[in-house]
Length: 475
Ligand SMILES: [Fe+2]
Ligand SMILES: [Fe+2]
Image (cartoon, rainbow, N blue to C red; front, side, top):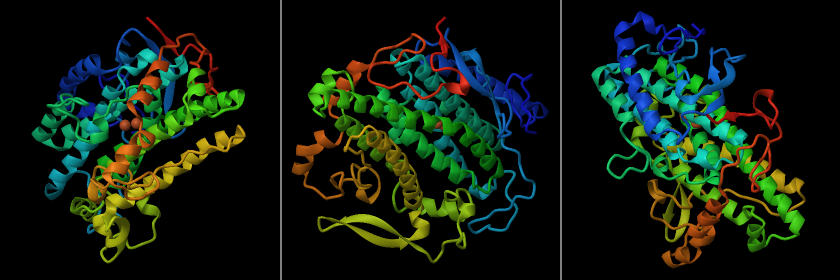
């Protein structure tokens, strides 16, 4: 099962050739996917040959091979982690029962909704990033962008396979709709807010892949616990690919900071105007980008109290992050959890039933994980001998979902008036001027081994290739 059959039109390890109806349906979807890729995938990239990794198996050792390919010819396929026929459900009301190989009728609507919502984020991010290739700061970075793009395309395939195989006609219609919605489109937008925001420049891209792809990691981890076994197995394999996306974000922001720190030391100054004159991105601007992407991303976890979250858990559709490692009863009926709300001009904690607070639980797990990486960015500043530090804003800052939406809160977590917010927002979130400045730095650097002035080179290349390798060959 772990060997991928590449002789097929659609590479897979799910025995697709044994199910002719399904195979035919997916082979009909395939040209629509390619049309979508041509329309809104990476701009002007058709003739590029890109040093990409392609999945060749689901064995954690040696699951990928590398080589120059045209992205259009990338072998998007359907890969599930090996199954365990004896797997049992380990949380919720069905705990102890055998995991589901197919969709139970009573959970069909909720499962479909979850799969469609996850599936929708995958093509959305490709659409958001489609112009970035034109301004990549190096061939190394360009290759990483394209790697992420093709893998998000494959993640769409992963969800579309589940829809086609397990949801009949509704599933096929949903699979078509996934190719029809467009990020940022007023009439037919992507489902979730953060996936309709623009990713206009490379600092945004690195922040997005650090924070928003990490949201993906946490959602996928929660789905990897699902009682619906095909969903658990497919999301587990997606996580293998996802790790690289977050690496691109973390190392990308780290390299921007490293270059800025170098300029600060050369100039012996943290004056924004002087640093901008030197063509690097000042730390306050980096902080504002961080504030933006962090706050928009934590909204993705949904309302802090949600009866849907309780239903998804109790019915066994969606677990918690690392459900299997937690030593509680995995039912959570009598437990409570603290959520925040604004009362009397202050943020106050309130105990609510934990089942209803599972979005908040996952959000808090995400926050812990993302704070750790910000600590590693600060190490770059520390190593450079600088006293400056980046921080994540308070989780109530700039929220648009749940009890905190509509409350104006400073990055430190103080409830502020509309007037104070308006007077300070340009210090807290990227201003038009910040974005214009960052945009002014963007321009394609296409010589192997050369890097734009605003970013440091990476420590090493991809797959042990040198940093000055020709990661992308322009056709
Ligand atoms: Fe993805
Ligand atoms: Fe991703």
